[in-house]
Image (cartoon, rainbow, N blue to C red):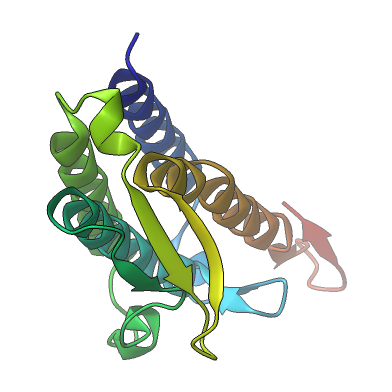
Length: 171
């Protein structure tokens, strides 16, 4: 199995897990904060922006010698979302971004995915110089997993009143 094939497989696995997790998200959960940080919708928007940046970074790595990529989202896409954006729309957009990455990776040989990119932080200092495939693997692996866990945590924080309205129980 080539590295591109393993990346495509991982993308498909993440897309399936995302859909499974999102089935449990209702309209109330869309705006609930996970870890007092982001709402479920904001997490989805962050991942949408991140996947867009990953695709752009991969394309740059294939066309330029060691391009420099910023370690932050251009424009903080998750901050620009309309309030009340439907979770189903955001889910479809994120799944579309994952499909775009899979399409971009499809058929690439290991040498292409080994082309290096330099990632710099907000202060302009280089954070690391890594193969584009490894950067992509992190974005669709550990980074994606972290945000799926945040969505799960937001769902675990859901409480509903009991029948008599006296207590709340976690669902």
